[in-house]
Length: 188
Image (cartoon, rainbow, N blue to C red; front, side, top):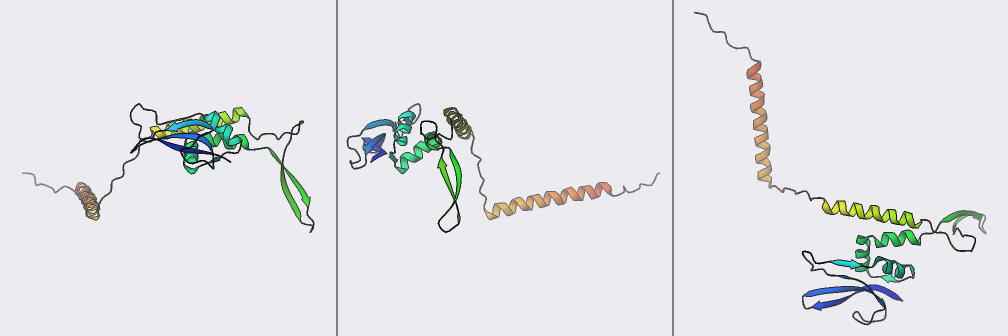
């Protein structure tokens, strides 16, 4: 069985990983079948943190390679798992029949073309369109600034509430004073 996983390179306390296709029986840093990319968790500045050949990765996934959880998370973040999932889905039709006990049985069977090959549910154009939308949404989230939450103690909250109440009382007193008739002054 082929697995897509990471192999560690780099110095002590400076890890660097290759994303590879490897026989599952081989050790972590053993000989691999094909290199798919790399991941540098400590990259900063202009250094490239992640590079993956998506076409190679999808090819291995469609051939039945198993993915390690870490590589699956990386592929999901890059939209590779989305493309793979859309490419492997087949168009199916609903077939109803009755079972041995007379109950209604519903099965979904793949639709085949004239040559007997299953028809994919999504076309290549639809897959690429979904991938572009995913990447645009990802870029939008990346550029969004996080909202800072202010954590206040109970005393600070009470002080703010007291200040609000005092200003509301002062505003109400000023309003009453404005509505009250002005005292008449005797004319001399």
